[in-house]
Image 1: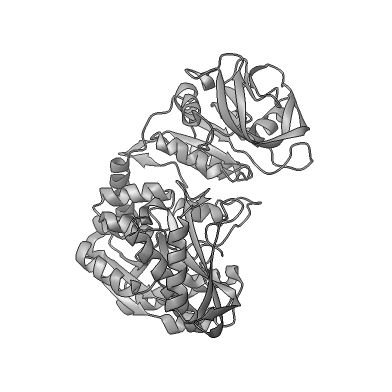
Image 2: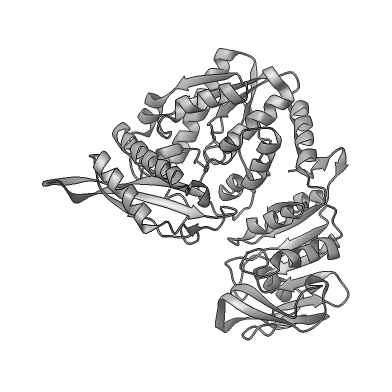
Length: 521
């Protein structure tokens, strides 16, 4: 991705060099919350991409490896050659120390969770902050000896060197994680680096961004026609609105009813877009095709890829019918790209393939338009509101691209889909009635691949098990299971078992992310 521009000028960018931390995306989001653009690149990417980005500063993320072992990730030399401010966080601090002559050890006493940080010397990183700060630690290694020409800035009870900085160069390092909400004044610490050390300008404005994206779409598409796969979710809806603003009638939307949508969703989506956005939408009834392609497949990665390929096949077929379609537009957003290892790292780990990233076949005939590819979900929502999309559409809970296909654990059938649609509908309906829908960030039902004995009336029922899932999160990178009232859960469970004769038991998922993901597959 080339360095972005807004209103024909280059915008300041903070590069986050990713060493594999679960919090890496949070760093970029926190920077963008301060109206400064940030981009994530893996530590092992081609150095020319880092140089071309020309960042105002670099943040080195945490990571799961230990610098005490051989052949673990290291900072590429080009980062130092850029001569811009550097901030190492956790693993970023440790590899910075090792590479600059310090010494890192595996600590006898590891730190996971809250810790009191004591600032022992002045630093631009801790400017206008208290001398004692409650911070979030997550490390087994720590710096034992400072590198040459570095000063100690802060300590904790178990990590004597918890923050350090170079005496002459704008190089800083901290052992804790300022990007998580558990660290007091974490945003201020990051802003001290962004604005105090890097002197970055606040160029990342939504209104300017919309104007720039409209311009970019016009330049890319020119007089050609674009086909958009419309799901009715936030991402594809915002993509549709942005494209409509840019190219008007040259956009045709195809809404694919793959049979894996929520109850009554197909008709609701068609009505919503007709009423609110005046889009040209074609509905493709493709349930039988998807079910046929998914027959006997139970591996979640394979399901995602099959669904992705089938979507593309349908789009290609629709494009042939429409004639002169050259581009396929998608609502791909930044977390999709990162989780699918679309960041071009030689060692990036795939968490799960997204149907519009990892599931695209190489032989796809259409060129891609992905105007949201570098945006996080909350930024997409802000853009949607700026574009005039109704609030009730923008505030809908996220729904995965593969739909209920990744909420039916195991093989997908029409019968299982019907059961899950009914259970999910009951859960969401009751959340809305109880005024709980907007207190949770995402809620849904999952059909498990087991059966359970139940008793309904005087009859034995050996039937399916439904799991309910609800989480609270700001960024969807970490999430806490929602502590819904017991009476509410009891009511939902009773409705599901009483109204769906194919279900004998309901359970509630109390796993947080991490270690679990939000979706089950």
